[in-house]
Length: 424
Image 1: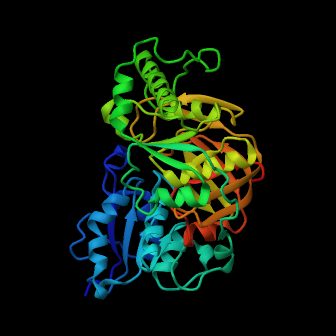
Image 2: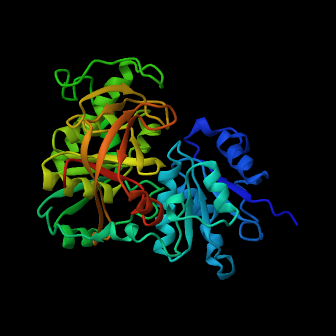
Image 3: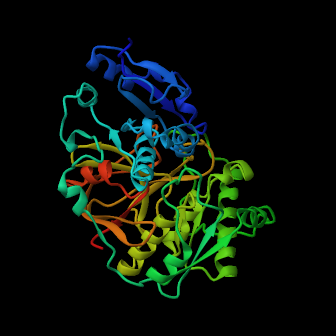
């Protein structure tokens, strides 16, 4: 009987850079070399998942795959006979790790055993050979884990800090936020804030009705266009479209008397052939809490941080872990907290106007409020470097956070986390 480890894959159609066969990736080939045997590659055919005695891995190749997991894998986990550990293999590129964290959070909410395999090829191979390894070898499961991971998630203690404030949800949360559902009544009771549902079509219509002069002219506060490092040239239509999205969101803020909002931004890729990255960067700089992907817990986390510190913060994906060094990235960042920035295109789609910002090195706080507003991850850290590499979202920072890798790989509160300048 074939005992080779079985490799299944999940890939979002948005990530055109991952169109090639996973078996040809250097990342996969490196693990095979460390194992001494090749994978039995099944691609996205999960018809035999859970029916083999060999180790089975789901390679989460990109972000945006959480919905695919629900479609292809989750139904197979309903059977009591198919409750082996769900192993999520992640790379350090294309938001692979961030998507795996959201999936692991979903599994934990349902009491399903899961683990993330992330790190060097030799570490992953050792894990697959059953040689054990500590939590710091970048694996997480419902088996006993490093106690530090659990203590980093503690009860929420900031009270009704958002009392009287209103936050818009422009479009539904993105389909891949499978563990981040929020009950508005809980938000009202625990934080004092009101959530306001706004159809995405209302924003799209507002943008389409905008004339060339309808968006506020921010020429005095925005830098002129530059040639992107990785994306295509940003032309005048891209630029004006991004400003029109900003102007339309500003109109919604006034109309609904909002203190902040979260935007189902990926819908704009097809509806407007543009992105909200620039608009959100500007709104946050103006004191209007604004997050992307319709992520309500991330928006509330940023709002709590702003209420406590008076500052905007950075909503980001965790992209890579190397010991205590954590690489976070996203395509928008508040212009008020960067020391320098330039424009690029949106990573996943290659269109629109995104931000590559550089944040000052120094003390920061990693923060995330749970969807039920009862728990929070709140960890002091130190921002040590800014990077600018391909196959990652455009703003990229390296954070030193001793012990935090255990939390992210064992008990993460969903996908996005917030980087707050200074102490929270």
